[in-house]
Image 1 (cartoon, rainbow, N blue to C red):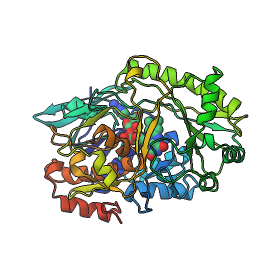
Image 2 (cartoon, helix red, strand yellow):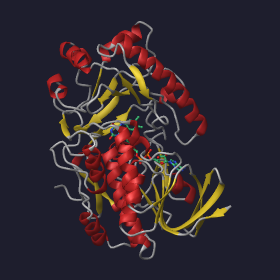
Image 3 (tube, rainbow, N blue to C red):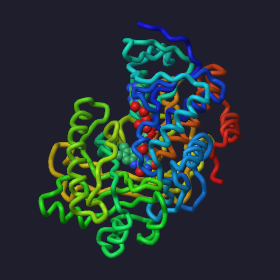
Image 4 (cartoon, protein in one colour):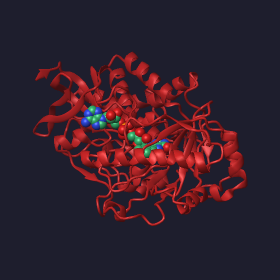
Length: 465
Ligand SMILES: Cc1cc2nc3c(=O)[nH]c(=O)nc-3n(C[C@H](O)[C@H](O)[C@H](O)COP(=O)(O)OP(=O)(O)OC[C@H]3O[C@@H](n4cnc5c(N)ncnc54)[C@H](O)[C@@H]3O)c2cc1C
């Protein structure tokens, strides 16, 4: 087994939160290694979904620091749109995942961190609640990587679980998770025709049940680049009645790419999947790829403007919304999220809508889902604070967690999992890891005022502006 040199900070998972965390740690002065299983950085961010919640619904920024810098760099190359207010999501920003990938890689390289791609975190070597090293597997076999502080950005809390940190799974009452979806991108769309159709067919553009934002209107969306919507319920119902559609979902989300006739499509859905179970993941990949083909047939046959569309990109893997969440000294709640609560130890902010896709017990047992299943979505008027305690799992002293597996309830995680929020928690965790590595290696022992001051100096948004 190869033994690598000792690092100050090792970040596991180079996705939405992980790259930002590693950049933050390196810029804060830590010798940092980023470990990622795939050959690209960005994780689920590279599916091309629009970023909701960069600003809150009252237009105040919730994301600053390294995440905002990434978006600003990508904007210079035309890779993301401006932030626009959105009646359903509060705010929205369209993105081109290829531009974002390149910007991420440039920033990672410039930060001075080391990267280890094509390497899969396997387990930890832990002694009395302190991780000594992680073991990773790659083409060279197994490697041991020692460090002072670790940051788990695997999305699934793989490292935290392996090290014995407290964690939970899925919904509190039954442990079931939000459904998974494969996001794909199509080209050859004539969006002018699609908007014109929606203008005269409000039944395909209705305000969804339970939705608390302003009324939908095509005029609000049409002129704004990168602004996506969910709808097409009537067309889906028609296709289902004709036997052309079997996907357990009532609506379709679409996110136009900046400046070109390409659209990210969110239409597939599989319930009852545990994203940490390889057999479930295999089933989800096979089924969502079948649904992708069915979705493209539906688009061509039923949706005006998409008659000649074709698949430009299928995802690097099925999109998993929820698996493990660590238990920290504080558990973020839906009430905190909805009320825009602030905390004395807040180190990041969130404004992504509370977005919980139906968790179907029937589907978990393989049964049909009546009506297909919906999505609960509430926009966030005022951004909320995220306490440092949510990033420090109980049971392991030298570990931080960022991204969708932070300490939150099932419902609150429906907001904290948003891309801008993952970037913000990544920044906070990376900076805290570097500061802890420079002292006794225990993030919980850091003076919180000093952490907050460092983050402010780095441009992070901690207080609501
Ligand atoms: C279908 C879908 C639609 C969504 N839509 C939106 C949207 O419209 N807008 C929005 O803002 N957010 C959206 N989200 C939420 C958001 O995209 C994700 O929650 C967020 O990107 C997750 O970030 P993360 O850093 O926690 O995880 P990821 O971005 O998944 O990063 C985890 C990284 O860790 C790596 N990894 C995992 N395990 C290991 C291991 N054992 N060893 C090595 N590497 C490992 C992965 O390869 C990946 O690169 C959506 C999510 C999904 C799934």
